[in-house]
Each structure stands twice: as C-alpha cells, then as structure tokens.
Length: 397
Length: 103
Image (cartoon, rainbow over all chains, first blue to last red):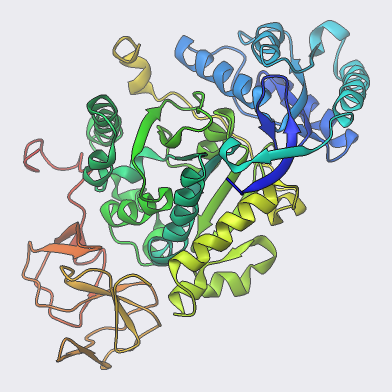
C-alpha cells in the first residue's frame, strides 16, 4: 500500500521491471553464438552463456531446463530467443515451449540446422530485431510493491556484513513483506550453525523439517567427502575479513532475510510465489549461481551485500550492491549502490539504512540503473547437481 | 549498531557474548574499558576481527550475536585475538569421526 513503481505488465499478469530480450543458449555449444547475437544487438538484448554440456545426466538436464525456462519466463524478459547447437539433450523447442507458457513471444534458432556460425549470427540478428520490435511496444504502468519478488544475496562477506549490510537489507525485506511482497534468501551452506533460529521461524512443521533436511544434506556433503568445510567456509577472504567459522558467517548471513516468518523453502530455480512473504531457496553458496537460481524463480530485483567488495551483476535482474564496510564504500564507490558503512561508523541505525535500501529497491524497479547495470556486469552460471546428489537421486525424487 | 559499543573501539553484539568485534585496526597494548574492567589487548586486532573479553579456557564455547560461533582450541586470555588459530567450528566436520560431535 502506497509503495508504487512503474513496470511492464506481462501476459501472465506479472510485472517486469526491465524489458529485455533474452538470448538463451541451451548448452555451452551454443553459448558463444548467443553471446555474439546479443552483443551485436545492443543493451536491450541479454545473453545467458553458461557451461552446461550437450549431454547431461537426467537430474542435471532437468535442472538446466528449469533454470533456463525460469529465466525466460522472468517478467523482466519481454521476449526470448532460444539458441541450440542442435545435438543437445536440452532442445530449443522443448525450452521454448516451457517459456511460451507465460504468453511471451519466443523464437528458436539451431546453429546446426541453419548451417553454422555465420548463418546463425545472421538469422539470430533478424530474429531478435523482430523480438525487440514486439517488446518496445510495451509501456511502463503503475504497479505495487506487493508485486515484487525480491532476492537477497551476499558475497565477499566480512565482519561488517553481519553487523551492518545484512541486517539493513533484512530490514528492507521486512518492509517489503509488510507491503505484501515476496522476499527470498538462499545459500543453504550459510544456514549451518544458524538453522535453529530459522527453524523456529518456519510457519509449519513441514517447512521446518524440509529446511533442516536441506541443511543436513549440505553439511553431510562435507562428511561424505571426509573433509571439513573450513577450507571453503568461511572462504580465505571471509577469514581475512574477520569471520572465523561457518557458524559466525551464517549467523551474520541469515540477517539479510529480515525477521518475518519463513513461509516456505523451494528448490534451486523453483518458482517463487508473488505475495508470498519470506521464502527460502535451497542453493549453493556460490553467489553467481545462487542469484541465477532466484532470478529463475521469478525475482525481478536483487540486493547483494558485500564487505570485502564484489562487482557481480546479472543479465536479467538489476543487482543493488550494499556494503557495510566503510573502506569498501570508499575504495569501490563506482560498484556500490548503497552505503551501510554508516552503521559501523555510528552515524545511522540499521533501520535508517533499511529504509534507504527499500527506497532504492523501488527506485530501481521503477527504472533507475544500478552500478552493475551501468558497468554491464552480467555474470551467469548454472549450478551442477553434485555427484552425491545424483547418486541419491531416488531419494530426492 | 545493535549491541554495545565498548570504549568506542569494540562492539559486543549481545550480553551473552565473550568476544568483541574491533571497530578499528587496534594495536597490542591498548586498554579497552569494558563493564567497569580494563581489557588490555594482547595482540594486534584488525578491523572486524574479534578479541576475548573474558578468560576462555581450551574447549570453551565462543559466543557472538548471543549464539555459538565455535570453541577455543587452547586457553585464550582476555584481550587476545580470537580467530582460526585458536577457535574452531563445531559444524560440517567430515574430518572428525562420526558421533564425536554428539550429533
């Protein structure tokens, strides 16, 4: 109520905050061509090059398809072009069909069928020009904060993350949830040591059990491999920034989701409900893959907290950078959108900065470009299904 | 900032905590007034890193945010830097025998 912005109303009723034409390769074999087609076209065309192969185990194939379909369906995408090499087990038609269910225009291109790279670039150029014509007819119209799905992420954490940037972003999540929207945070390895707090906030027993099961699974990956998490969690950079253990990192990380009840936990890249309150997603801790999972779930705007600094963005959703480290704010201003270092310096409260983050989310939804967009930072990666997850595929199904 | 700022240079996030977070690069020998007592820093403590505000015997649970963040691997005196050299995680420990963690 009273928190409005303007966005692009899509066929399925969802509201987009950007109006991109997405160029989606179905495998690594089509990724260079997809990147070139989008690169030649202009900033309105966004490619999602990735590393997944032409032949994938079933569980991996299904996940790749789910991610790419979710990205194509994201309401920031006005039209999509799906590019295959032509020998993939994720075919362009199958992916295009899944995206077309949202009602938006989707075209397909097969590099092998049109006769190679040069022909594919030409044909691709023609196809996305036509797609662009269709999308430029869309006009921004009035929308409400309750229609936003807001993903929050952290990367390059240090001790200021848990003290300033994460609680400030968490306060913005609380404000959005109060306004009727959806907030989502993820990175399951960074629930370890803080899951008892999250479990208490789950709205029902099923959500609670599911959450604890997902945390167990991530922790047992380390047990299975006969190693401990300490080499990677916290990372050497986190450790240099003052974070000693995964518990300490997690306790700081979960504050970025705010304080409202946890209404559900979804799989990687699974659909996030509109008007759903606070929802968790089970993702790895690798920030680029984790952001992609939430955007595939439907998030239109991302806030990304960092202590040590990070420049990453996303091709489809604007990424708002928030740092709680005054030195990082000073050193990397051109990559930062919101300064939460004022909390550490005693100049502002967490709630003051939370209000600024929330206002920034609405401004960015309304069209204000983030620093990552300005610099065209558009990292994209799909998480691998881990060998132990493939082995226990039956259990997961 | 949530929690209590001590002597302008340290942050104690919860009353149950036994470590404080340095709000500046602090040098060994510096006195930090806390709760009517003086903690003298034994080590240099960089910005964002932690120092003990109570004696922490080996195996003691370390609290920050009022929650468990690990346990000490040796005796730690008040004013000592608390980090990976003297504090370890109790979680995700595939390197130690099953059940040793009491899970």
